[in-house]
Image (cartoon, rainbow over all chains, first blue to last red; front, side):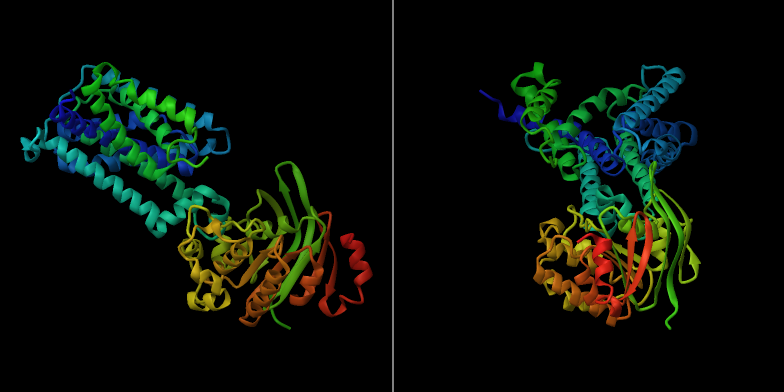
Length: 289
Length: 234
Protein backbone atom coordinates (compact mmCIF):
# COMPACT_ATOMS: atom_id res chain seq x y z
CA UNK A 1 0.00 0.00 0.00
CA UNK A 2 1.33 3.34 -1.01
CA UNK A 3 1.92 5.67 1.89
CA UNK A 4 0.27 8.95 0.91
CA UNK A 5 2.19 11.06 3.38
CA UNK A 6 5.53 9.67 2.24
CA UNK A 7 4.55 10.18 -1.37
CA UNK A 8 3.58 13.81 -0.79
CA UNK A 9 6.78 14.42 1.14
CA UNK A 10 9.01 12.95 -1.56
CA UNK A 11 7.03 14.73 -4.27
CA UNK A 12 7.51 18.05 -2.50
CA UNK A 13 11.22 17.44 -2.02
CA UNK A 14 11.39 16.43 -5.67
CA UNK A 15 10.03 19.83 -6.62
CA UNK A 16 13.19 21.38 -5.16
CA UNK A 17 15.36 19.43 -7.58
CA UNK A 18 12.73 20.27 -10.19
CA UNK A 19 13.23 23.96 -9.49
CA UNK A 20 16.88 23.65 -10.47
CA UNK A 21 16.09 21.50 -13.49
CA UNK A 22 13.53 24.06 -14.63
CA UNK A 23 15.76 27.11 -14.27
CA UNK A 24 18.76 25.47 -15.89
CA UNK A 25 16.86 23.89 -18.77
CA UNK A 26 15.05 27.19 -19.31
CA UNK A 27 18.39 28.94 -19.75
CA UNK A 28 19.53 26.21 -22.14
CA UNK A 29 16.29 26.51 -24.11
CA UNK A 30 16.58 30.28 -24.45
CA UNK A 31 20.20 29.98 -25.59
CA UNK A 32 19.57 27.11 -27.97
CA UNK A 33 16.58 28.88 -29.49
CA UNK A 34 18.43 31.99 -30.54
CA UNK A 35 22.07 30.92 -30.75
CA UNK A 36 21.62 27.36 -31.95
CA UNK A 37 24.28 26.37 -29.49
CA UNK A 38 24.00 23.54 -27.00
CA UNK A 39 25.59 25.28 -24.07
CA UNK A 40 27.62 22.59 -22.38
CA UNK A 41 29.19 25.24 -20.15
CA UNK A 42 25.83 25.70 -18.43
CA UNK A 43 26.63 23.40 -15.51
CA UNK A 44 30.03 25.03 -14.98
CA UNK A 45 28.44 28.49 -14.99
CA UNK A 46 25.89 27.30 -12.44
CA UNK A 47 28.79 26.11 -10.32
CA UNK A 48 30.50 29.45 -10.90
CA UNK A 49 27.38 31.22 -9.58
CA UNK A 50 27.74 29.30 -6.32
CA UNK A 51 31.46 30.09 -6.16
CA UNK A 52 30.89 33.78 -6.80
CA UNK A 53 28.34 33.84 -3.96
CA UNK A 54 30.83 32.09 -1.71
CA UNK A 55 33.61 34.47 -2.79
CA UNK A 56 31.46 37.54 -2.22
CA UNK A 57 30.80 36.35 1.32
CA UNK A 58 34.34 35.18 2.11
CA UNK A 59 36.34 38.03 0.60
CA UNK A 60 33.94 40.97 0.61
CA UNK A 61 31.59 40.07 3.43
CA UNK A 62 28.57 40.36 1.11
CA UNK A 63 25.83 38.03 2.27
CA UNK A 64 23.24 35.90 0.53
CA UNK A 65 20.78 38.52 -0.64
CA UNK A 66 23.34 40.83 -2.29
CA UNK A 67 24.86 37.71 -3.86
CA UNK A 68 21.46 36.73 -5.24
CA UNK A 69 21.61 39.90 -7.37
CA UNK A 70 25.37 40.30 -7.89
CA UNK A 71 26.40 36.73 -8.71
CA UNK A 72 24.01 36.37 -11.68
CA UNK A 73 25.22 39.75 -12.98
CA UNK A 74 28.84 38.69 -12.69
CA UNK A 75 28.21 35.27 -14.26
CA UNK A 76 26.13 36.97 -16.98
CA UNK A 77 29.01 39.35 -17.71
CA UNK A 78 31.40 36.41 -17.97
CA UNK A 79 28.90 34.80 -20.33
CA UNK A 80 28.82 37.91 -22.52
CA UNK A 81 32.61 37.87 -22.70
CA UNK A 82 32.50 34.18 -23.59
CA UNK A 83 29.92 34.74 -26.33
CA UNK A 84 31.92 37.57 -27.91
CA UNK A 85 35.21 35.69 -27.91
CA UNK A 86 34.52 31.95 -28.12
CA UNK A 87 31.03 31.44 -29.53
CA UNK A 88 30.67 34.24 -32.07
CA UNK A 89 33.04 32.70 -34.63
CA UNK A 90 31.14 29.40 -34.46
CA UNK A 91 27.60 30.40 -35.47
CA UNK A 92 28.09 29.59 -39.13
CA UNK A 93 29.43 26.12 -38.35
CA UNK A 94 27.67 22.94 -37.31
CA UNK A 95 26.02 22.67 -33.83
CA UNK A 96 28.77 20.31 -32.85
CA UNK A 97 31.44 23.03 -32.73
CA UNK A 98 29.48 25.14 -30.27
CA UNK A 99 28.88 22.07 -28.16
CA UNK A 100 32.58 21.17 -28.14
CA UNK A 101 33.73 24.73 -27.45
CA UNK A 102 31.36 25.16 -24.50
CA UNK A 103 32.30 21.72 -23.22
CA UNK A 104 35.94 22.83 -23.31
CA UNK A 105 35.07 25.98 -21.41
CA UNK A 106 33.31 23.87 -18.79
CA UNK A 107 36.35 21.62 -18.37
CA UNK A 108 38.65 24.62 -18.00
CA UNK A 109 36.43 26.36 -15.43
CA UNK A 110 36.00 23.21 -13.41
CA UNK A 111 39.66 22.29 -13.65
CA UNK A 112 40.89 25.68 -12.49
CA UNK A 113 38.53 25.75 -9.52
CA UNK A 114 39.32 22.16 -8.62
CA UNK A 115 43.01 23.04 -8.57
CA UNK A 116 42.34 26.03 -6.37
CA UNK A 117 39.74 24.68 -3.96
CA UNK A 118 39.81 20.89 -4.18
CA UNK A 119 36.70 18.74 -4.43
CA UNK A 120 35.63 18.47 -0.82
CA UNK A 121 33.43 21.54 -1.09
CA UNK A 122 32.93 24.62 1.02
CA UNK A 123 29.89 25.15 3.21
CA UNK A 124 27.60 28.12 2.57
CA UNK A 125 25.24 28.85 5.42
CA UNK A 126 21.50 29.25 4.94
CA UNK A 127 20.74 32.96 5.45
CA UNK A 128 19.33 33.57 8.95
CA UNK A 129 16.05 34.98 7.61
CA UNK A 130 15.31 31.72 5.83
CA UNK A 131 16.20 29.22 8.54
CA UNK A 132 13.65 27.03 10.27
CA UNK A 133 10.84 24.91 8.93
CA UNK A 134 7.28 25.35 7.72
CA UNK A 135 4.60 22.87 8.73
CA UNK A 136 2.81 21.77 5.58
CA UNK A 137 0.57 19.37 7.47
CA UNK A 138 2.06 16.26 5.90
CA UNK A 139 5.67 17.27 6.44
CA UNK A 140 8.01 19.90 7.84
CA UNK A 141 9.57 21.74 4.91
CA UNK A 142 12.81 23.63 5.55
CA UNK A 143 11.92 27.24 4.80
CA UNK A 144 14.95 27.70 2.61
CA UNK A 145 13.82 24.91 0.28
CA UNK A 146 10.39 26.43 0.01
CA UNK A 147 12.06 29.71 -0.85
CA UNK A 148 14.07 28.05 -3.64
CA UNK A 149 10.92 26.64 -5.22
CA UNK A 150 9.19 30.01 -4.93
CA UNK A 151 12.05 32.02 -6.42
CA UNK A 152 12.48 29.52 -9.21
CA UNK A 153 8.77 29.59 -10.05
CA UNK A 154 8.77 33.39 -10.14
CA UNK A 155 11.90 33.55 -12.28
CA UNK A 156 10.58 30.90 -14.68
CA UNK A 157 7.17 32.51 -15.04
CA UNK A 158 8.75 35.95 -15.40
CA UNK A 159 11.01 34.67 -18.15
CA UNK A 160 8.12 32.92 -19.87
CA UNK A 161 6.05 36.11 -19.73
CA UNK A 162 8.89 38.20 -21.10
CA UNK A 163 9.47 35.87 -24.02
CA UNK A 164 5.88 35.04 -24.92
CA UNK A 165 4.01 38.24 -24.09
CA UNK A 166 6.26 41.27 -24.56
CA UNK A 167 7.63 43.22 -27.51
CA UNK A 168 11.17 42.23 -26.57
CA UNK A 169 10.11 38.59 -26.52
CA UNK A 170 8.53 38.95 -29.95
CA UNK A 171 11.90 40.17 -31.30
CA UNK A 172 13.53 37.20 -29.68
CA UNK A 173 11.07 34.67 -31.11
CA UNK A 174 11.22 36.29 -34.54
CA UNK A 175 15.02 36.33 -34.53
CA UNK A 176 15.00 32.64 -33.60
CA UNK A 177 13.07 31.95 -36.81
CA UNK A 178 14.64 34.39 -39.24
CA UNK A 179 17.48 36.52 -37.86
CA UNK A 180 18.34 38.08 -41.23
CA UNK A 181 14.85 39.51 -41.67
CA UNK A 182 14.63 40.81 -38.10
CA UNK A 183 17.96 42.53 -38.66
CA UNK A 184 16.61 44.01 -41.90
CA UNK A 185 13.74 45.53 -39.90
CA UNK A 186 16.31 47.61 -38.04
CA UNK A 187 17.09 45.49 -34.99
CA UNK A 188 20.66 44.81 -33.96
CA UNK A 189 20.45 41.03 -33.80
CA UNK A 190 24.09 40.33 -32.83
CA UNK A 191 23.70 42.49 -29.71
CA UNK A 192 20.44 40.71 -28.95
CA UNK A 193 22.20 37.35 -29.27
CA UNK A 194 24.96 38.43 -26.90
CA UNK A 195 22.48 39.70 -24.31
CA UNK A 196 20.38 36.54 -24.62
CA UNK A 197 23.39 34.38 -23.91
CA UNK A 198 24.24 36.64 -20.98
CA UNK A 199 20.69 36.26 -19.68
CA UNK A 200 20.59 32.47 -20.08
CA UNK A 201 23.90 32.16 -18.31
CA UNK A 202 22.81 34.57 -15.56
CA UNK A 203 19.91 32.18 -14.89
CA UNK A 204 22.49 29.45 -14.37
CA UNK A 205 24.41 31.76 -12.04
CA UNK A 206 21.25 32.50 -10.07
CA UNK A 207 20.54 28.78 -9.77
CA UNK A 208 24.06 28.36 -8.43
CA UNK A 209 23.50 30.93 -5.69
CA UNK A 210 20.20 29.29 -4.76
CA UNK A 211 21.94 25.92 -4.64
CA UNK A 212 24.89 27.05 -2.51
CA UNK A 213 23.17 26.65 0.90
CA UNK A 214 21.62 23.29 -0.09
CA UNK A 215 24.56 21.51 -1.70
CA UNK A 216 28.10 22.38 -0.69
CA UNK A 217 29.95 24.71 -3.03
CA UNK A 218 32.30 22.52 -5.02
CA UNK A 219 33.72 22.44 -8.55
CA UNK A 220 31.82 19.29 -9.55
CA UNK A 221 28.35 20.42 -8.52
CA UNK A 222 27.53 21.48 -12.08
CA UNK A 223 28.73 18.48 -14.01
CA UNK A 224 26.67 16.05 -11.96
CA UNK A 225 23.50 18.12 -12.37
CA UNK A 226 23.86 19.09 -16.01
CA UNK A 227 23.49 15.54 -17.31
CA UNK A 228 20.00 15.32 -15.82
CA UNK A 229 19.22 18.81 -17.07
CA UNK A 230 20.11 17.83 -20.61
CA UNK A 231 17.78 14.87 -20.31
CA UNK A 232 15.08 17.31 -19.17
CA UNK A 233 15.74 19.48 -22.20
CA UNK A 234 15.48 16.51 -24.52
CA UNK A 235 12.21 15.41 -22.91
CA UNK A 236 10.69 18.90 -23.04
CA UNK A 237 11.89 19.60 -26.56
CA UNK A 238 14.90 21.69 -27.53
CA UNK A 239 14.15 25.39 -27.50
CA UNK A 240 10.65 25.20 -25.98
CA UNK A 241 10.33 27.75 -23.15
CA UNK A 242 7.18 26.55 -21.44
CA UNK A 243 8.18 22.96 -22.16
CA UNK A 244 11.43 23.29 -20.26
CA UNK A 245 9.73 24.84 -17.23
CA UNK A 246 6.95 22.27 -16.98
CA UNK A 247 9.25 19.35 -17.74
CA UNK A 248 11.79 20.56 -15.18
CA UNK A 249 9.33 20.68 -12.30
CA UNK A 250 7.47 17.57 -13.42
CA UNK A 251 10.60 15.45 -13.62
CA UNK A 252 11.77 16.62 -10.21
CA UNK A 253 8.39 15.57 -8.88
CA UNK A 254 8.48 12.23 -10.66
CA UNK A 255 11.98 11.58 -9.37
CA UNK A 256 10.73 12.23 -5.84
CA UNK A 257 7.76 9.91 -6.28
CA UNK A 258 10.02 7.20 -7.64
CA UNK A 259 11.85 7.26 -4.31
CA UNK A 260 8.63 6.08 -2.69
CA UNK A 261 7.66 3.46 -5.22
CA UNK A 262 11.01 2.04 -6.24
CA UNK A 263 13.95 3.97 -4.70
CA UNK A 264 16.57 2.12 -6.74
CA UNK A 265 15.24 3.72 -9.92
CA UNK A 266 15.08 7.29 -8.65
CA UNK A 267 18.33 8.35 -10.31
CA UNK A 268 17.60 6.64 -13.61
CA UNK A 269 13.90 7.36 -14.04
CA UNK A 270 14.60 10.62 -15.89
CA UNK A 271 16.71 8.77 -18.45
CA UNK A 272 14.11 6.05 -18.86
CA UNK A 273 11.51 8.72 -19.57
CA UNK A 274 13.93 10.37 -21.98
CA UNK A 275 14.38 7.12 -23.90
CA UNK A 276 10.62 6.58 -24.11
CA UNK A 277 9.97 10.16 -25.23
CA UNK A 278 12.67 9.91 -27.86
CA UNK A 279 11.06 6.78 -29.22
CA UNK A 280 7.53 8.16 -29.31
CA UNK A 281 8.03 11.87 -29.94
CA UNK A 282 11.63 12.55 -31.00
CA UNK A 283 11.15 16.35 -31.01
CA UNK A 284 10.28 16.27 -27.30
CA UNK A 285 6.95 16.66 -25.54
CA UNK A 286 6.66 20.38 -26.32
CA UNK A 287 8.97 20.54 -29.32
CA UNK A 288 7.95 21.22 -32.88
CA UNK A 289 8.93 18.42 -35.18
CA UNK B 1 11.05 66.01 -61.79
CA UNK B 2 10.95 64.49 -58.32
CA UNK B 3 14.25 64.02 -56.55
CA UNK B 4 16.12 60.74 -56.75
CA UNK B 5 15.27 58.53 -53.79
CA UNK B 6 17.42 55.52 -54.60
CA UNK B 7 20.43 55.45 -56.86
CA UNK B 8 22.19 52.16 -57.57
CA UNK B 9 25.37 52.22 -59.64
CA UNK B 10 27.71 49.40 -60.67
CA UNK B 11 26.31 47.04 -58.05
CA UNK B 12 27.93 43.63 -57.87
CA UNK B 13 26.92 40.96 -55.40
CA UNK B 14 27.93 37.45 -54.44
CA UNK B 15 26.33 34.52 -52.65
CA UNK B 16 29.28 32.66 -51.29
CA UNK B 17 31.41 31.89 -54.34
CA UNK B 18 28.79 32.63 -56.97
CA UNK B 19 28.85 36.05 -58.54
CA UNK B 20 25.19 37.02 -59.04
CA UNK B 21 25.06 40.72 -59.92
CA UNK B 22 27.40 42.15 -62.55
CA UNK B 23 27.06 45.91 -62.36
CA UNK B 24 23.39 46.78 -61.76
CA UNK B 25 22.51 50.44 -62.18
CA UNK B 26 19.08 51.92 -61.63
CA UNK B 27 17.37 54.82 -59.98
CA UNK B 28 14.02 55.37 -58.34
CA UNK B 29 12.54 58.81 -57.86
CA UNK B 30 10.43 59.92 -54.96
CA UNK B 31 6.82 58.76 -55.27
CA UNK B 32 7.53 56.43 -58.17
CA UNK B 33 6.51 52.81 -58.49
CA UNK B 34 9.24 51.02 -60.43
CA UNK B 35 9.35 47.33 -61.27
CA UNK B 36 12.17 44.96 -62.03
CA UNK B 37 11.12 42.40 -64.60
CA UNK B 38 13.14 39.40 -65.66
CA UNK B 39 13.34 35.66 -65.78
CA UNK B 40 13.99 33.47 -62.78
CA UNK B 41 17.59 33.76 -61.73
CA UNK B 42 18.17 37.10 -63.45
CA UNK B 43 19.16 38.66 -60.10
CA UNK B 44 16.00 40.59 -59.16
CA UNK B 45 15.72 39.26 -55.62
CA UNK B 46 19.47 39.58 -55.11
CA UNK B 47 19.22 43.24 -56.15
CA UNK B 48 16.49 43.78 -53.57
CA UNK B 49 18.48 42.02 -50.87
CA UNK B 50 21.59 43.98 -51.79
CA UNK B 51 19.73 47.26 -51.43
CA UNK B 52 18.55 46.07 -48.01
CA UNK B 53 22.05 44.94 -47.03
CA UNK B 54 21.07 41.29 -46.73
CA UNK B 55 23.69 39.88 -49.11
CA UNK B 56 27.08 38.81 -47.80
CA UNK B 57 29.40 40.55 -50.23
CA UNK B 58 28.51 43.50 -52.42
CA UNK B 59 30.41 46.30 -54.12
CA UNK B 60 29.50 49.37 -56.13
CA UNK B 61 27.27 52.14 -54.89
CA UNK B 62 23.77 52.24 -53.39
CA UNK B 63 22.69 55.72 -52.37
CA UNK B 64 19.49 56.34 -50.47
CA UNK B 65 18.49 60.01 -50.34
CA UNK B 66 22.11 60.82 -51.06
CA UNK B 67 23.54 58.60 -48.28
CA UNK B 68 25.92 55.85 -49.36
CA UNK B 69 24.71 52.54 -47.85
CA UNK B 70 26.98 49.98 -49.50
CA UNK B 71 29.04 49.54 -46.32
CA UNK B 72 26.13 49.55 -43.85
CA UNK B 73 24.54 46.59 -42.11
CA UNK B 74 20.90 45.85 -42.84
CA UNK B 75 19.71 47.18 -39.48
CA UNK B 76 21.37 50.55 -40.21
CA UNK B 77 19.86 50.62 -43.70
CA UNK B 78 16.41 49.94 -42.25
CA UNK B 79 16.87 52.86 -39.88
CA UNK B 80 17.40 55.17 -42.87
CA UNK B 81 13.88 54.41 -44.02
CA UNK B 82 13.98 51.41 -46.37
CA UNK B 83 11.80 48.37 -45.67
CA UNK B 84 11.53 45.02 -47.40
CA UNK B 85 8.67 42.63 -47.99
CA UNK B 86 10.63 39.49 -48.88
CA UNK B 87 9.72 37.01 -51.58
CA UNK B 88 9.02 34.22 -49.08
CA UNK B 89 6.93 36.77 -47.10
CA UNK B 90 8.77 36.06 -43.86
CA UNK B 91 5.73 35.74 -41.62
CA UNK B 92 6.84 34.43 -38.24
CA UNK B 93 5.07 31.27 -37.11
CA UNK B 94 5.87 31.79 -33.43
CA UNK B 95 4.17 35.20 -33.50
CA UNK B 96 0.49 35.91 -33.86
CA UNK B 97 -0.83 38.30 -36.49
CA UNK B 98 -0.77 41.28 -34.16
CA UNK B 99 2.79 40.57 -33.07
CA UNK B 100 3.86 40.13 -36.69
CA UNK B 101 2.22 43.42 -37.57
CA UNK B 102 3.85 45.32 -34.72
CA UNK B 103 7.24 43.63 -34.97
CA UNK B 104 9.23 46.03 -37.18
CA UNK B 105 10.24 48.97 -35.01
CA UNK B 106 9.24 52.48 -36.04
CA UNK B 107 12.33 54.03 -37.62
CA UNK B 108 10.94 57.45 -38.53
CA UNK B 109 7.84 59.52 -37.92
CA UNK B 110 5.20 59.50 -40.61
CA UNK B 111 4.29 55.84 -40.91
CA UNK B 112 0.68 54.77 -41.33
CA UNK B 113 -1.39 54.33 -38.20
CA UNK B 114 -2.65 50.87 -37.34
CA UNK B 115 -6.23 52.08 -38.00
CA UNK B 116 -5.24 53.21 -41.48
CA UNK B 117 -3.57 49.85 -42.10
CA UNK B 118 -6.79 48.08 -41.11
CA UNK B 119 -8.76 50.13 -43.65
CA UNK B 120 -6.31 48.90 -46.30
CA UNK B 121 -6.36 45.32 -45.04
CA UNK B 122 -9.64 44.72 -43.20
CA UNK B 123 -9.06 40.94 -43.12
CA UNK B 124 -6.13 41.31 -40.77
CA UNK B 125 -8.18 43.01 -38.10
CA UNK B 126 -10.34 39.94 -37.65
CA UNK B 127 -7.38 37.59 -37.36
CA UNK B 128 -5.15 39.46 -34.90
CA UNK B 129 -4.80 36.59 -32.44
CA UNK B 130 -4.26 33.88 -35.07
CA UNK B 131 -0.85 32.37 -35.53
CA UNK B 132 0.88 34.28 -38.33
CA UNK B 133 1.37 31.30 -40.58
CA UNK B 134 -2.22 30.07 -40.16
CA UNK B 135 -3.39 32.84 -42.51
CA UNK B 136 -4.09 32.11 -46.16
CA UNK B 137 -1.34 32.90 -48.64
CA UNK B 138 -3.07 36.12 -49.67
CA UNK B 139 -3.55 37.24 -46.08
CA UNK B 140 0.07 36.45 -45.28
CA UNK B 141 1.11 38.61 -48.21
CA UNK B 142 -1.12 41.44 -46.98
CA UNK B 143 0.40 41.08 -43.50
CA UNK B 144 3.93 41.14 -44.93
CA UNK B 145 3.13 44.41 -46.70
CA UNK B 146 1.09 45.84 -43.82
CA UNK B 147 3.81 45.48 -41.22
CA UNK B 148 6.31 47.64 -43.10
CA UNK B 149 3.85 50.52 -43.53
CA UNK B 150 3.81 51.68 -39.93
CA UNK B 151 7.58 51.99 -39.52
CA UNK B 152 7.90 55.32 -41.29
CA UNK B 153 10.03 53.79 -44.06
CA UNK B 154 9.48 55.72 -47.30
CA UNK B 155 11.03 53.28 -49.77
CA UNK B 156 9.33 49.90 -49.91
CA UNK B 157 10.97 46.91 -51.57
CA UNK B 158 8.23 44.46 -52.54
CA UNK B 159 9.60 41.18 -53.82
CA UNK B 160 7.01 39.38 -55.98
CA UNK B 161 3.97 40.18 -53.87
CA UNK B 162 1.66 38.42 -56.33
CA UNK B 163 3.54 35.14 -56.50
CA UNK B 164 1.27 32.12 -56.16
CA UNK B 165 -1.88 34.11 -55.42
CA UNK B 166 -5.36 33.90 -56.94
CA UNK B 167 -6.32 36.57 -59.53
CA UNK B 168 -8.81 38.26 -57.21
CA UNK B 169 -6.14 38.62 -54.51
CA UNK B 170 -3.66 39.92 -57.10
CA UNK B 171 -6.17 42.63 -58.01
CA UNK B 172 -6.48 43.54 -54.35
CA UNK B 173 -2.71 43.81 -54.03
CA UNK B 174 -2.62 45.97 -57.16
CA UNK B 175 -5.20 48.30 -55.60
CA UNK B 176 -3.13 48.41 -52.42
CA UNK B 177 0.03 49.35 -54.29
CA UNK B 178 -1.82 52.17 -56.06
CA UNK B 179 -3.18 53.36 -52.71
CA UNK B 180 0.33 53.34 -51.26
CA UNK B 181 1.56 55.42 -54.20
CA UNK B 182 -1.24 57.88 -53.39
CA UNK B 183 0.05 57.99 -49.82
CA UNK B 184 3.41 59.07 -51.20
CA UNK B 185 5.39 55.85 -50.74
CA UNK B 186 8.17 55.10 -53.19
CA UNK B 187 8.07 51.48 -54.30
CA UNK B 188 10.53 49.16 -56.00
CA UNK B 189 8.71 46.03 -57.07
CA UNK B 190 9.96 42.71 -58.38
CA UNK B 191 7.54 41.03 -60.77
CA UNK B 192 7.41 38.11 -63.14
CA UNK B 193 4.01 39.16 -64.40
CA UNK B 194 4.39 42.27 -66.54
CA UNK B 195 0.65 42.55 -67.15
CA UNK B 196 0.21 43.07 -63.44
CA UNK B 197 3.26 45.33 -63.34
CA UNK B 198 1.82 47.54 -66.06
CA UNK B 199 -1.26 48.23 -63.92
CA UNK B 200 0.73 49.71 -61.04
CA UNK B 201 4.14 50.94 -62.19
CA UNK B 202 5.54 54.10 -63.77
CA UNK B 203 8.62 52.46 -65.23
CA UNK B 204 10.04 48.98 -65.72
CA UNK B 205 13.63 47.83 -65.58
CA UNK B 206 14.41 44.58 -67.35
CA UNK B 207 17.08 42.35 -65.81
CA UNK B 208 19.08 39.64 -67.48
CA UNK B 209 22.09 37.72 -66.16
CA UNK B 210 22.71 40.04 -63.23
CA UNK B 211 22.44 43.29 -65.19
CA UNK B 212 19.81 45.84 -66.12
CA UNK B 213 19.45 45.54 -69.89
CA UNK B 214 16.57 47.88 -70.60
CA UNK B 215 14.23 50.46 -69.12
CA UNK B 216 10.69 50.81 -70.42
CA UNK B 217 8.37 53.63 -69.32
CA UNK B 218 4.91 52.26 -68.62
CA UNK B 219 3.30 54.25 -71.45
CA UNK B 220 5.65 52.51 -73.92
CA UNK B 221 4.86 49.01 -72.70
CA UNK B 222 2.41 48.21 -75.50
CA UNK B 223 4.82 49.47 -78.14
CA UNK B 224 7.67 47.42 -76.66
CA UNK B 225 5.59 44.28 -76.22
CA UNK B 226 7.58 42.19 -78.71
CA UNK B 227 10.84 43.09 -77.05
CA UNK B 228 9.41 42.31 -73.63
CA UNK B 229 8.21 38.92 -74.76
CA UNK B 230 11.68 38.19 -75.95
CA UNK B 231 13.29 39.33 -72.66
CA UNK B 232 10.95 37.33 -70.52
CA UNK B 233 10.71 34.36 -72.85
CA UNK B 234 6.93 34.14 -72.64
